[in-house]
Image 1 (tube, rainbow, N blue to C red):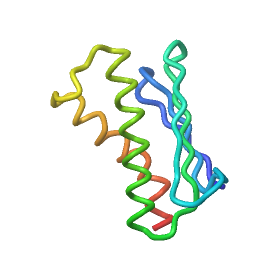
Image 2 (spheres, one colour):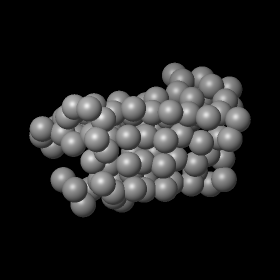
Image 3 (cartoon, rainbow, N blue to C red):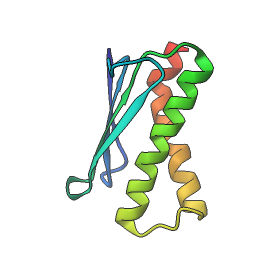
Image 4 (cartoon, rainbow, N blue to C red):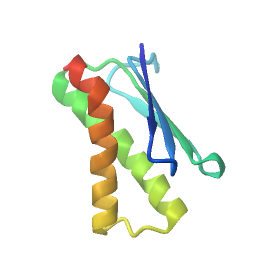
Length: 99
């Protein structure tokens, strides 16, 4: 397992665990504590690089949704689009080495 801690400039903290045993391959989960402005993401082992990317983007979307909810950001806005791009870009610093 590999752990990554991401700080979105003091607004939100994300912990990602890659290779987490979640009962089956090709799965993920996201738990968010909005009071603490924190999300925990688990990514299980996957059966392909494409499935790995699918799971990462899927879970990043959950994080983005919770942040948008908390800060009142319209999920159809450019701000929301930039936010998910920022999250995945930060995650890439670790998962890019796993591809």
